[in-house]
Image (cartoon, rainbow, N blue to C red; front, top):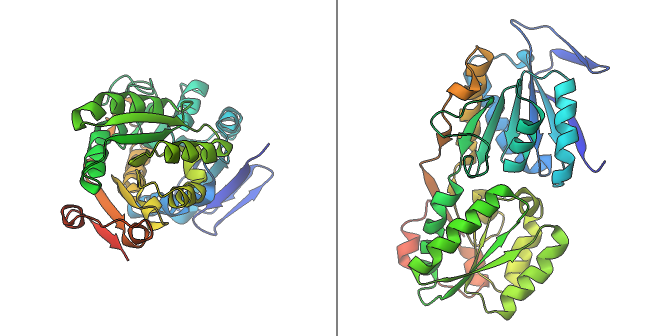
Length: 327
């Protein structure tokens, strides 16, 4: 199985032997499953933000056992990973930045609470019945992928005022990406843009996808937060540079890592808020009674070095809107 398994801890005061945990603790010990579709290393800072959120709520390090399951970017590995967590009798499953992970957890259990963090389109994908009252055993936060999509179109127009064609690099196997594609297809004509959907379900499909964009002289490309793509982000950034296609990302770290521009919510804040939800659930609140939180504050990060490499001059209208400029 192409994945890695971690037993993580936030303090030294416990011992894991043969799948059991013994702890010296000032209170009960909670087992939290952390389900990840992409490579776990990518989300280390976010996992740390979540753990710090628990500390801020008064949890001792020895009270939390974090059981991390990493699918390595392979969605088909999610169901067996959820089964492992359920066999370990976790108190809560945190589905990390992945609609497929949240859906896999929901399909596997109606009893264990699930906190989905920074997922897209939770209602449209069937994850919950409504934002205000999710019902069932799922709650969490959404990055408002579809609602923010028109804003990214506006950014593309501001970056290149004469643009007529824009591409979406997406994964059709990701239900949140499918909802995003529908939203963009409706929104693009309102911006006098023609949308080209360029699918890439696997890493091997990325090279031909960017080759297609280059041949079609795509004015810009929107890159989703799909976990398969995020796991291959260095490759995507390199291909965008090679084919000189301006790319707008929906993860802030993508711009920090060399992408041209990102417009997104602060993931660390969402993971700290996830700790609040986990705390409420551990104290007896039903997840279905906790409204899905919607990110309302978004940052714009522009990588000026990448812009220079692409021969682009960033308009002043974007520079003054930017939360962060990377030289």
